[in-house]
Image 1 (cartoon, one colour):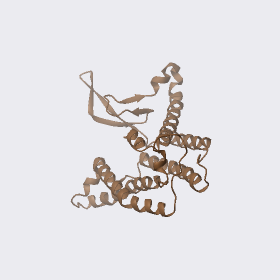
Image 2: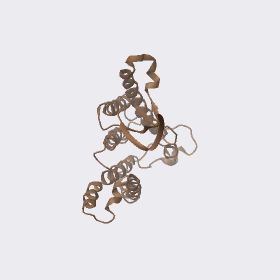
Image 3: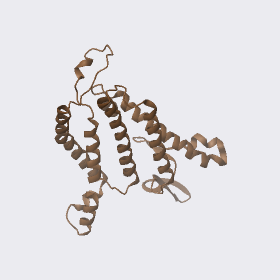
Image 4: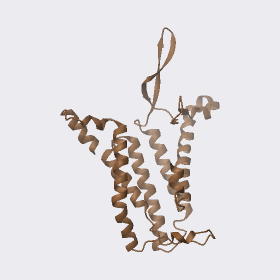
Length: 245
C-alpha cells in the first residue's frame, strides 16, 4: 500500500519518495517491520495462548528432554503469518503476480496449518489433520500456482538480450527483456536460467506443449515438498529455522 502512496508522492517531487521504487529498499523495510511485529505482537499472542491453555502435548518417543516442551503454546504460526502479511501489504507492489501468488500460498498453507493445530488442541487428536487431506490441499495449491504461471501474461522471466555487432553476437548483461518461458531462475549462478525444454527436447515438435506439463508438475512437487519438509522439521528447536536459512 505504501508503494502506491509514495509513488504518487514521487510525482509531486516529494524528497525521498522515490526510494520506494527500489525493491531492495522495500525488502529491507519489510524485513525490519516484520521483525518488529514478531517481537511486539508475538509476546502478546503467546501470553494469550498460555492464558487459554493452548499448549503442546507430547508423544512418548523415548527422547531425552522431550517433555521439556510440554505446555509450549502451539498455533504460534499465527505470529509468522501475520508478520508476513502485514509487511507485504505495506511494502509490496500488490499488482505483481508473484506477490499475489505468495500471499495466496501463505494464506492457503496457513489455514491448513491452523486446521491441523485446531484438531490437535481442541479435538484432542495428536495426529491432527489426516495426511491425505494435507497432500490434496498442497497439490491443489501447486496446481493453482503452476496454472497461474502458465496462463498469466505477467508471469515472465527476465533474460539477457543478445545484440549483433559486426556480425558477432555479444552477450550484453546489462540489457534485459521479459520473456514468457517455462524457465526457473537459479540464484548465485552464472547463466542461471534452467530451461525445462531440455528435459523434453527429445519430443521434437511436441516439446513446446509437453514442457508446460513438466513445468506444472515440477511446481506441484516443489510446493508439496517444501511445505511438507517444514512440517516434518517443525517441533525440534531451531531445526526448521536453521534448514530454512
